[in-house]
Image (cartoon, rainbow, N blue to C red; front, side):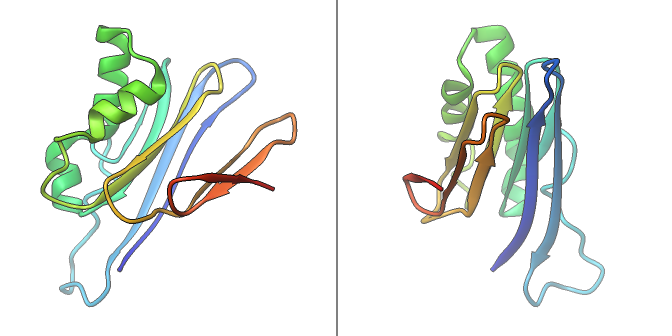
Length: 139
């Protein structure tokens, strides 16, 4: 079991932020720290988006999906969801992972290559959505 809390946010001026906390694996070796919170790997924010990702730490650290989302948005002109799909596809074959991201326009996207990931988001207009499996539910 992987313990993880991540957040991506955008303010009313379009400034993005991200944070990631990893409790790590149950029964981990003493002294082991989380790989996922490393900037660029599991946490990244810039003028385009904020991204928080976790999963198998070594796979996340090697693939650097959080930074990859921003890079393909900037250089390939992809939408946030297209960038998330690109970052998740093939790059994280070595481990399970999931990420959530927000663009400076307030678009929310997520991706996962495992059975499920607890996630949710809220907007300033009062929309609240949560999900575990494929579909997001409106509260």
